[in-house]
Image (cartoon, rainbow, N blue to C red; front, side, top):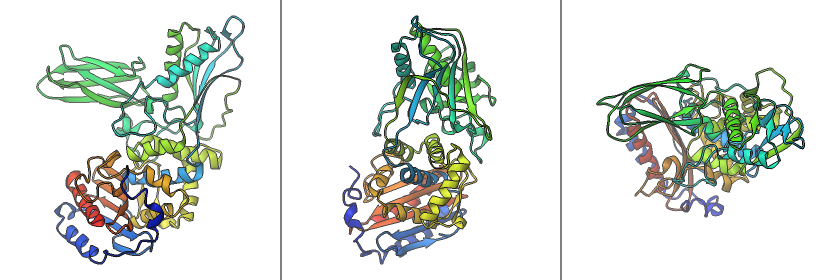
Length: 483
């Protein structure tokens, strides 16, 4: 399924560098002819995994913004520190169980345990799997609560994400990122990736819908019918009002945008309250959120467990995180490691554990600076040499097979699904992509025609050419690696 690189991994350590002698000249020719790279900067290192021999390098010890290549560091950390079988737990707790009449005296608390997949996502990862019901986890929990005999709740429905520190936007994320799905806030109680889909349907007037269909935000719709598709979306920080304006042609496809949910714990509480009400449960209180602010000590919720969902094994989420480059999930993994190893679910504690891990991998502190776990932060810096050290370390670790299963496969799945098709690299390049404005990166492994394996890291910064042009150059080099 993943080409020869995965099933043949045991023998690859014995392979040599036969056939690599002419490769540096071919790579240099591609770079010399690459007009797309002339005004920016490119760092790269290519190493034969078995011998550690450097095949080609340029600016390999310079620092570059890695974009989502940062996820290589985070997923490696989570895999080695937590193990592929780790699971997360989401519970619904009351101070006491229901009385004989089905009454809960007090609040009902939905406690997040860091499960990234309280959504309709199909696991294990499959190419082109359909997005399911984003609130199916909430519906399942509501069913369990009712099955316990609950008919009335004389208190609030509380969403509790205090397992992780409420510091939802990592250092270096742009303010403009926070409204969109790719910049969803980090919370131990994550529902539907902390996003909702806003859809504008052509017509007169323009019709607006949201998915999941929970009326959490007030939508101020000011879109008009016009000749062009030009839509603008705005939400003030902390506000539950979304303003949308612009023009949409009267005929044609609907316009859809993935927007973030600013307070996932509150949203989850609202969703559970609505689901219980539909099942006939009378609720006197409102939806509320319980956060653990930085520096604040919050006692874990305790009482009688009325409902519980257990996550899929960690390895299945790491595959999603890496293959589709899911920012939120990478941030959740960083905090999961922090809570497990350092006793506090914060980004700072996760990055401290990352420092220890990278020392074990032979990466020095001068070779990187990480501000988040996903790569969305512009403050992240790594050298191509550091990335290749990580790749070599993981390839030679006991986790090799699991590690390789995380990476997108050229021409087959994830963010490389449409790249390398009908080339020698199809099925033989396993690599993590990365992209920000003026940044393109690609790092991973390439299997050569003789069976040897190369680890590589390409980091391109300050590029003013179109991303497609920069990617084309990086892809040409990858094809050379596999010939």
